[in-house]
Image 1: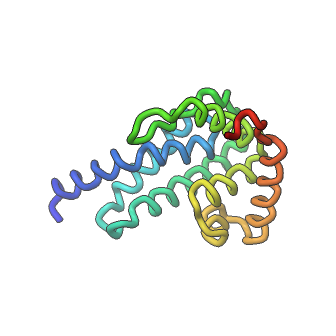
Image 2 (image 1 turned 60 degrees about the vertical axis):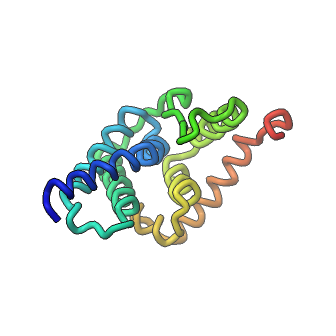
Image 3 (image 1 turned 45 degrees about the vertical axis):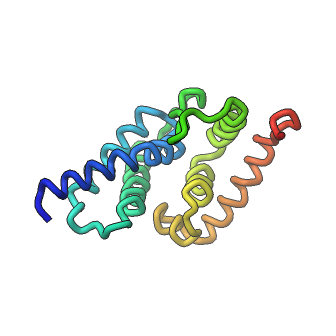
Length: 171
């Protein structure tokens, strides 16, 4: 594949994958600017390996880089300052902004996710938001399968307590 074709293919991937990668990164970092930097670093690493990335596997490949880079950064810093959940990236999709009721419910869920301990939040995001298997989450986070299961269980239990939507938000 010629460089021009490879670059065009990568540019298309970046345009399509960036919104989803930003949401995942924000859920993992809790900060919009850190999420943008994490996505940029992940895309840079993906570009350098683009010729080896199999067709159709670019998103999982980049997501793995994103999670690994996040883990490396977290280990080095060991400090996080979470920002107000109202500063999260907007979940606009191809059909435009989400209806107002969905935004309110989604904002409540984001606030509950931010309140989770770090490992529980990372496991819940990767396991249920990204729909990864327990084994994949364990591998990506560098923790045992048992730690994934217990963190997911505790994280969901905490979310149920924290989130507990009122009857007014459920229609």
